[in-house]
Length: 429
Image 1 (cartoon, rainbow, N blue to C red):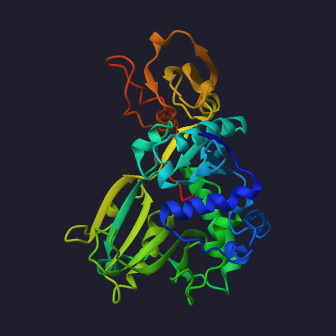
Image 2: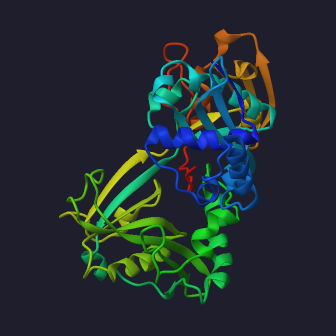
Image 3: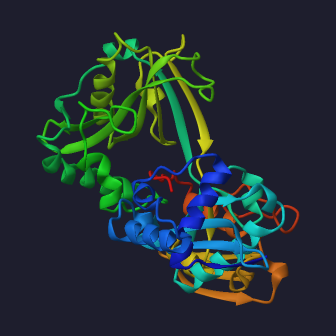
C-alpha cells in the first residue's frame, strides 16, 4: 500500500470514499452541478474546479491538502484530509494540521492504508513548518498508533430551564442577531473570540468561513433543517463581552442523557468572557422555559457554571468533564521553543516518534524567564525524566498534563515547570 498527496482529478474520489465509509450520500452543491457529466475524469476535474472557484469553507480553499492510499494497480481505497489552521500555543500562533475525513473502504481496512497515509502526511507537514496536529477520534487507541494523545478537556452541561428564570440579570443587554444588524455585530463577535484565543491554548484563529454563522445569521428561517438563534450580550459599559448560538432540537438515540423524542435547546456556541456575561446569556435561555425543559451545551473546563447557579441539585444541573479531541506535536524543537515555562531550570525527556524520525531522541531544554533559552539533543538517555510520545508531549506542553508512563521508577514530569491550564478548541474539522 503506497500513500501520497492527491492530484486534482482525485478530489472527487476522496469524497466518494468518505460517503461510502460513513453511509453519507453525496449531496453537495458542487456535486449536484457536475454529477451528470458522463466522463468520470472530466466530472472529477469539474468537481474540484467548482470547489476551488466557489469556496464555502477553508477545506475548499485547501482542496488538495488531502492524502490517499493506493493499491498496486493505482486504486485509491483510503483518504485523509489535512487542513491548515493557526493555533494558539503559549505566546505564539503556530501552524496546525487539522485532520479530518479519515475514511477507508470496508475491504481495505486493517491492511495498513491509514497508517501509510499518516506516515507520509505527518512528514509532509513537518516539512511545511507545521508544529502541531489535532483531530477528533472515533477511537483513542487507534490514533495513539500515530502519536496522538488526548488534548482539550471540556465540560458538558445539561441545565433545566425553569430554575434559570430566578437568576439575577447583571446590568447590560442582549441583542438578537439578524439581517438588520449582523454586519455591525460581527466585529464584536471577533473581539470576543480574540479574548478567548488569548486565554486558551489550542484555540484556532477563525477565517471568514468560520464566521458564516454570524454573517448569515437569520433566526426567522430554517437552514439545514433547523433554525439557529445568535445572541450577543453587552455589559453596562456597552462593550460586547459574550455571545451564543442555539437551536431547538429533538433528542435522538445518541442523546442518552435525555428522554427519547424530548424537545430541548442545543447550544452550539457559548462564549462569555466572565460571570456577568454568562448570567445575561442564561437569562435569554430562561425565556424558553415555557416550551422546553432543558438545554445542552459544551464549554471550557474552567467555566464554572455549576458554581454560579444557586441550586444544582434535583436535576437542575448536570456536568460531565470529557476530553474533546487528540493532539500531537509535529515538530518537537519548535514546540519546545513555543512552550511557556515557569521558573528556571532544565527539563530532560525522551520522545519516541514512529512517524517523524527527526522528533525521536533525548531532548534537553534549558528554560529561564518563561521561555526556552537552549534546546539540544543528548546521548545520555539515562538522565531523562520521562519517555513521551509526541501526543503526550503536546498534551504536556499545551495543557500541563503529566499523567503519562515514565522512564524510570519514581520519575515524572515536574508539574511546576509547565503550568496546568485549561484549553479550548472551538471548531471541528
